[in-house]
Length: 166
Image (cartoon, rainbow, N blue to C red; front, side, top):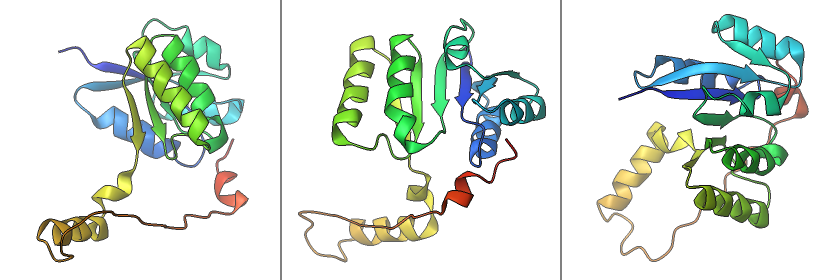
């Protein structure tokens, strides 16, 4: 089986996790990274020994990329994902999928239309507390489930997003 070749968009705070995760998978390969900040793109590109871009279209136009991992500001997720799907690229989006239901639905529909895969990253489902909660639910410790809902505040100050060297 051929490796899935990735382009990573967004070289800020979380990009190291994405780049590392892709690079350690047997069936994946990080091919290139992109950020509008040249310093950030160059830093991640050089660290992982891959090409780097500052223009999204130049990344999307590459024939050696099968999938785009989007790790940008949340407000750009749907727009960038839709463009990737239109170019026939599979899309993996850092949470949230989009900032509105309408944007999320547009992204989902575009991926269906183009027959590309779409995934959102929700890594907390693998955290110990989430796993304990799932186990308790599976064991019936909450009785018969009819509806589940959670509201978790994940607020971060702007300095969190500005923390990259780019």
